[in-house]
Image (cartoon, rainbow, N blue to C red; front, side):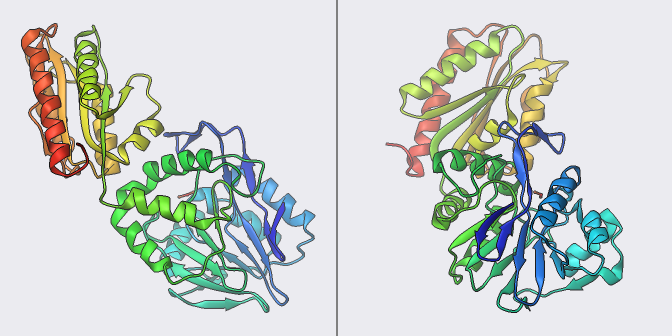
Amino acid sequence: MRQIKQGVYAVGAIDWDARLFDRLIPLPDGTSYNSYLVRGNEKVALLDAVDPTRSDILIDNLVKLGIAGIDYVVAHHAEQDHSGSLPDVLLLYPGAKVVTNPRCKTMLVDLLGIEDDKFITVQDGEMLSLGDKTLKFLYVPWVHWPETMATYLQEDKILFPCDFFGAHLAAGNLFVDDEAVVYESAKRYYAEIMMPFRRQINANLAKLDDLEIDIIAPSHGPVHDRPGFIIDAYKDWASDTVKNEVVVPYVSMHGSTAKMVSYFVDALIERGITVRQFELSTVDIGKLATALVDAATVVIGSPTVLTGPHPCAAYAAFLANALRPKTRFASIIGSYGWGGKMVEQLAAMLPNLKAEILEPVLAKGEPKDADFAALDILADRILAKHKEIGIAN
Ligand code: FEO
């Protein structure tokens, strides 16, 4: 338990040892499930609960603070890492009402079986007085579920945006103490769950323009006492701007595709393009997702397996398609033994990428001079495309 401002406390749980989220997302630096208590002189509100595996820590923190009663539990988001311990909180504080929007209410009923009479639903912009502190609720849909909302604590100018602006980062210090570390972690988090909703993120960022914000207290990672840092980062990531970068996720079985990738990556570097190469059988998908945030171009490398792409390459294509990065150009390089439809199948897996497909390069067996020449042509074409959109010299 830590105090953010007078009457405002962080009462959530730091999960230092967590290593996988949703059985999908690696957590190299753990995470935290942040919950905040706002004590007004008339009413007390808890903003979000924690993951159900950490209920005991939340309850312990509330007990340590001497919280005899909670009037409101604000649920910004129904996903279980913030709502899963709500039933435990409601058992301990039976008089508490769950304050949320109608859509989140429906989801909490579906996911957790919370009874109808426990809810107070609020509209976008509605206020709730705690006495000397006032909560204002803001709908910020699709960061990253449809029901997500934020709370603005007016008197203290604190924004509680739940997942929005969050980071999977376990940290002992309450506030951001190293912006470079938090930037990397927040960008990774943005890439993994926010990036598909860039349009809605821009709308939600615009909605915050009128607010005077001193502190942003998200539901994962450290609290921002320099909110401009994370707001500006989000504006950059969610903008239409791409960078002079090529992401090359690849996998190779017997070395042919690896030779092509190695040659191609050198060719791009020689042309002054930043390259990020990822070997897909061992990749940290969080790092790959992060690289996709800014890159103008993605080139997937795959051998042909059973007439199609290597399953690791198919997984990367599926993931990239789901994450909807702002990639402008894409291509495929790789090899085959006797035939197949590797290129066609991989390209068909990327309908969400609004990218221009550049002529793929496919080698029969070991790459030969003509294949290396074709890779040079692809590198030239990428550079020309990057010049066309003004990101390369
Ligand atoms: Fe941190 Fe979408 O839950």
